[in-house]
Picture 1 (cartoon, rainbow, N blue to C red):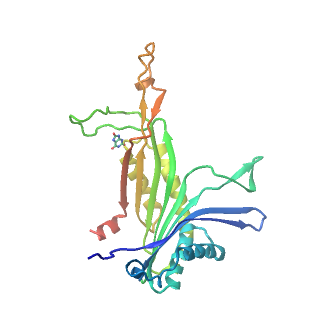
Picture 2 (picture 1 turned 90 degrees about the vertical axis):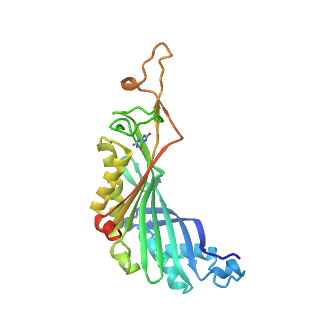
Picture 3 (picture 1 turned 60 degrees about the horizontal axis):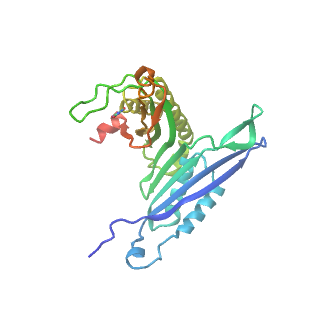
Length: 303
Ligand SMILES: O=c1[nH]c(=O)c2[nH]c(=O)[nH]c2[nH]1
């Protein structure tokens, strides 16, 4: 005998663009990719070929377009909450709605030294990301984040004092290149009051995102890093300090290695240690360091 133990379904990769025509005749644009997934009284579609309760994935996509027309799409935490809340209001047999949003960068162009009214440039692959979950009777939970923020420092990073045994080859270093593609996330205290409570926080979402980017980049640049582990902990602590409603912060940082190249075979060229100038960037393998840092009172209440 078999049993359906979990099911959810929806539309992924819904691409969306919205223009805002400002009163001063400038325009602002937002481009995002949305994923909607629904759970609830839907099992019969899997087990009995009964689609009665299936809100077609096409309907979910059309809903995203309609909601984008009727409501603001910024900040993405608000738009995700509007969508997730809508699915529960509209469909009594749906009990959980997941909405994920990836916001793509369109930075305003600078032309002749001035911000252009309606031209934009994709200045980075960095994404602003949001995951909203609406559970019937439990309000909304929101996780915000950054992905794809590629950073490198050419000095000001060390790694020494680590465990050594017969498997160890890596030398200790007091000066190395450090590069990573930042994936950061911050979890908001649950919005048990639902959409109305999310609306009250609306300015906090942009501020948290701006602060998290700034903290990430400034800490990366300023700290003489003893390890990726320590650097991500310092970043997380500061995000918790700057956003009182955020309960926990997560970082996932690949360590993108740059290897020294010994060129002494060519006429005795010195290219290692203090003389290193030409390096070989490695695409793989890479270190992968992850941590979740939780506000103390939340961590102890969960013990
Ligand atoms: O910051 C680092 N953390 C590690 O755990 C590690 N391991 C390694 O080989 N290099 C590094 N660097």
